[in-house]
Length: 168
Image (tube, rainbow, N blue to C red):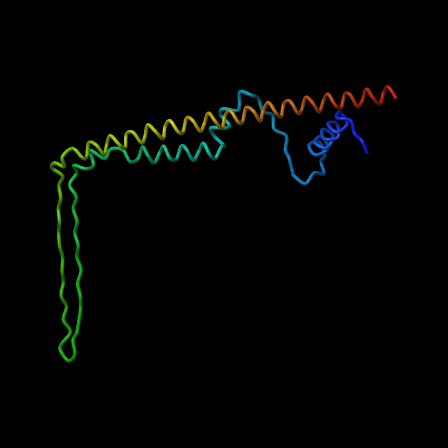
């Protein structure tokens, strides 16, 4: 059976129309009014990839402040005890404990280098987050215009079919 190109295209559009318009379709689709201006907010709020990039940025931000924290003293205390018995001898208990304090006086500038590295990480994750957001927004915009085109095309095809039936 031979088909003209426009017949094949019309059949594909009709199949898409039936899928989109049919209430008995397997997928439950709810109508949502969406404008082009809503896309940036929706991408920022609901896109999981953009949200994940924000979490990476937050993690990098949380690691800054190393230089200040490196000069804070650290305290370590251990307390415990042991109980033992050997053969016929009486049970013995022995407590133990230790206390340790450390302070960072000078580490040859390594703390400053570490802080600079972490600040660079924050800058890099901020750039990555912006790149991901823009990429996802561009994809959302392309999808929006593709849907608008398809909707307009379906309207044109329905009108063409209506006119064709009137002419017969």
